[in-house]
Length: 221
Image 1 (cartoon, rainbow, N blue to C red):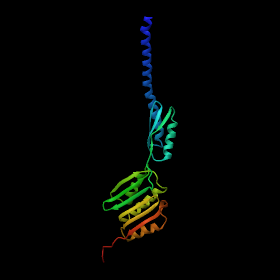
Image 2 (image 1 turned 90 degrees about the horizontal axis):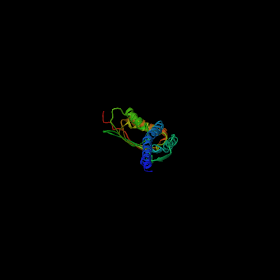
Image 3 (image 1 turned 90 degrees about the vertical axis):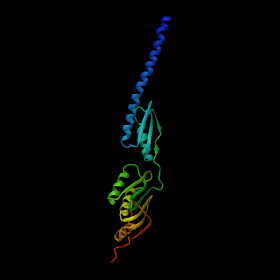
Image 4 (image 1 turned 120 degrees about the vertical axis):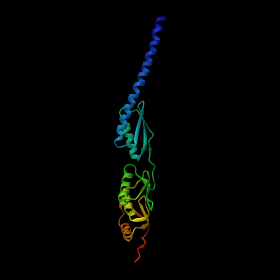
């Protein structure tokens, strides 16, 4: 019996340790493979999302631009082969009610403030601002949010074109309400701004507060 004890228990302990070590070394590669697969699937249409997997349990992280995008990411995570459970730690972008956009034009340049949708909208707006008012410094203080009304970018383009006709002033979009105040660069711009406001406003915009002044002619004669 002593001989049996001398080799039996050390052997059992060795096998147990080898089993634990095998599980330890095999688990990490499997988790990494699942993580890579989940993130590759998410990156196609949900670049905001990321996944971490531990022991086949997936944790979804990120800030979703919409409820639909969050649902889509959860669906992709759930369909990843090998995933056992999903812990949704993703959050939604803040909802802006009303969704606002403000252009402030002064001698110092252009200030863009308010809200901007998730995605490439910011880059598009900045490009439109530079095209409408070339050579003028543009300060971007836009915050990404949900809640942009349909036609928002069309209304922004219209606002930028009118801001270009001001020497100073402010153009504000609040939901679909469009307001403008300030001084037109000249009589022609004053007439052009007012004429555009009498026509249907792009993006289904609705006229709000209009406070325009014509430029004062200081040339004399």
